[in-house]
Length: 158
Image (cartoon, rainbow, N blue to C red; front, side, top):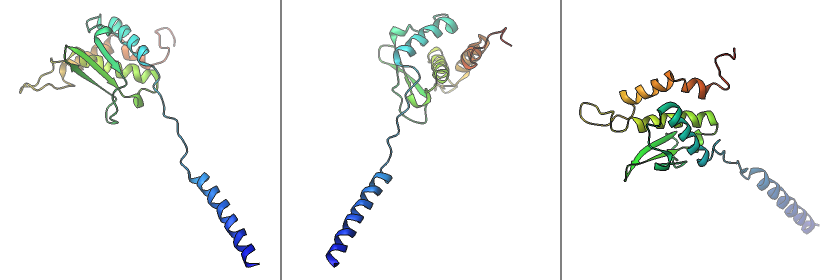
């Protein structure tokens, strides 16, 4: 009788352990993906360059634009690469909605426009200096934030 109980307890313990392993196993959480792929981002860059910058920025063929920013502290970063090519690295975690991606892209495009122009008294480049701020205000003046931020906004839609 003792052996039978030991076997039943062993089977019960194995079943309990099996059930617990299933319950405590971390669930796979799907990683969110950005609202736009890089091809769509490049199309937005071209559209915004024409609409808000009068094509004054480098054409998209001379820009590297991807989801290459992984630091959670940054939504995106812009760098000047050798050969005068800019790289805009977007952080996919912040571009889950198309509107967010649009606004981040406009922000980074102002960095391109103000590159090497925002310099303080010591000659240090200030990334969010007066020229960059003027660019952002010009985007606002041209309606970029109203168009890109407020869905379906048009003057007569009240």
